Amino acid sequence: MGYQAQFRVWRGDDTGGDFVDYRVDVEEGEVVLDIIHRLQATQAGDMAVRWNCKAGKCGSCSAEINGRPRLMCMTRMSTFEETDTITVSPIRTFPVIRDLVTDVEFNYVKAREVPSFAPPTDLEPGEYRMSQVDVERSQEFRKCIECYLCQNTCHVVRDHEENKPEFAGPRYLMRIAELDMHPLDVRNRKEDAQEDHGLGYCNITKCCTEVCPEHIKITDNALIPMKERVVDRKYDPLVWLGKKIFKRQELEAQEARTATGRTSLDHPGPGNGSSLDADRIGPVEQGEPRGAAQA
Image (cartoon, rainbow, N blue to C red; front, side, top):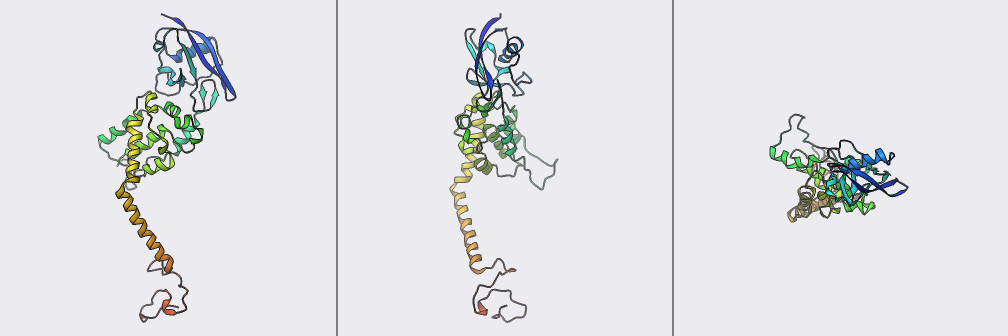
């Protein structure tokens, strides 16, 4: 049975705007996107809204409904009371273009910054082999429809615009975690995540998981395991000790090269400035007496 609902829809553009009140008919079984389309057809023909499939698979109709990031096509009107006032506003993290449409270019920029799959150089396409358990491990992450609700709700960029250059957001940190789990990917994804994509900014509040329409456990299955692997690599005492030892050996070798000018046995380097021929460094000619050196 139908009824009339009270809607408040944000109208405006990048210069500003405000909520506009509408009374609109609601029929049984409808979703919020149906009501927005009815408003376009009957009361607000110039209202801008982005949508495509209306089946929860394209991720286009992201909005904030009563302050919560959701897909309009997956939010049923039956979840509200008939007396409720329903507010619909654009996702807050990204710049408004007009009405409910936002500029999500930030996400495409971050997608291009993630290095693609890097297989071993000695394998040709068609020679890749991996076990089923490795396939299943990252399969969950492939369900992402790129609605960017997780990006929108993440407070690291939602409340701090200045973090956007350094932080990729949960969607693309999840992509890096997926590649790091791939048994044939040879790139150091842990260093990428920490140094280039801002994994350290994430404080695992799980807000990205809560709003995901595909119910991907972004925090538990991607971000936390990635953080653990980064910590293991960066702060493991054995790894730390090994780096110290090798670094010391490299420094000692560099100091020796600097002191003598010698770079290798085949390329002894320049003279050391001594006035004595015996102290000059140079290749010994075949048959030359052992004590003599090239001036």
